[in-house]
Amino acid sequence: MIRSKLALYLLGKKEGFNMSAMRRFVHETEAWTATDWTRYHNQHIPALIEHAYNHVPFYHQLWDKAGVNPSEIRTVEDLSKLPIIRKADLIAHFEDFKADDMSSYPMIHHHTGGTTGTPCAYYMDRYSWALNWALKMQTFEWAGYHYGEDCLGVMAGGSLTPGKKAGWKHRLWRYVNNYYSIPVTQLTDEKLEQHYQYLKAHKIKFLRGYPSTLYTLAEYIHRTHGTLPIQAVFTTAEMLLPHQRLLMEKVFTCKLYDTYGCGDGMGHATECDAHGELHVMEHCSVMQIVDANGQEVADGEEGEIVLTDLYNMGFPFIRYAPGDSAIKSTTPCACGRQTKMIKTLLGRSSDNFKLANDRTLNGLSLPFEELTDEVKQFQVVQEKTDRVVLLLVPKIDIPMERQNEWKRLLQFHCGEGIEVDVQIVDHIELPSSGKTRYVVSKVK
Ligand SMILES: [Zn+2]
Image 1 (cartoon, rainbow, N blue to C red):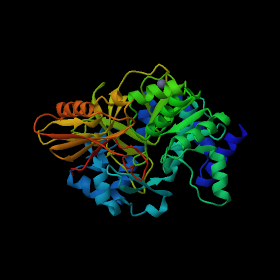
Image 2 (cartoon, rainbow, N blue to C red):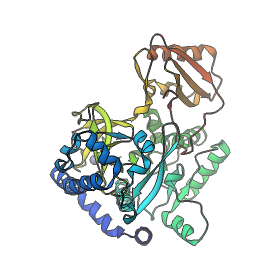
Image 3 (tube, protein in one colour):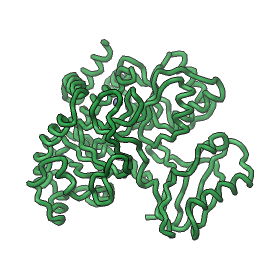
């Protein structure tokens, strides 16, 4: 408990907030009803909208052009009257997203890996960031992990691990986080064995990271040692594929908790200990799942995730679509927490290609789990509107007959008039974020 308390205190000290109070608030919200959530959101919306209209050039122009009267936007329901904005708007109008009084708010400069791996800069509100941390700590506890107290093996890029800078502050910060960092690149058998030995020797009971890299570790252990008992695995930042979950739960002999997080817009959703669907955590933002017209979809329907950050006044995100899709659910969770729910995350909308023959292909809909024993990595690349290539990094020799089988499968999914190819390659480049992209389109 001491280390947990110290971690909370130091994190609060560093950020200038009372983290213990935030933790208590987040804890209290576990008993909130849908009415409590609506009331909380509606308390924040009018001030946010008024501020964005009066201080942020981008929203002023956008809403004027759309003929929206900002004083009429008072509730979550009213948000649907506002146009949806995207990463492309952020890149094109970066300066206009800054509030004219931005310097009076505590901000964190950040960037997100774009669809092509191009970082896109933005600002997070420091309070919103800290509240989101308190929220993560709460949801981690659903799996029995206590921040600071338990050591967490983290297998992810820079965004999830403390920096490697020198100096006592950074050393203390790393001590408080109590992470064992496992790099996501150069995962040779030799390195994986070292990580396996370390996790085992130090009895590390919790793992967090990108599904693709944790899966690589699980595959190695499965092949060499069989299992490594862990208490819980948290996956984030990439689409979790069903065959990855299956193998990880088998090798680590525990349940996996998938999470969705998005700093640009402060979106957060997480699986709980009932392991049904994902709870939408709306402390920092409002999350809507919308159709092509920007209206909320019905229960069980697929839509795009749209976020409104409730606290970011300096660089507001209002009706922002980060490019992710999900299926909405209205089924209450067995755990009793009454948050909004997501049935399934469907990956990024950029995982869908529009082809020259008018078909839309979801690159993740191919049965890649069948390639598990043959392939280390794969990537579907739309090179042109009428050409799609499947790249495979083989584990074993893949005979031409098998390659042709996949070519026919790809052709079936793409349809007539589309040229397809299967190519065997040595490796697939990771973007700077370290996150695996299974689907890439080179078509603008
Ligand atoms: Zn639940």
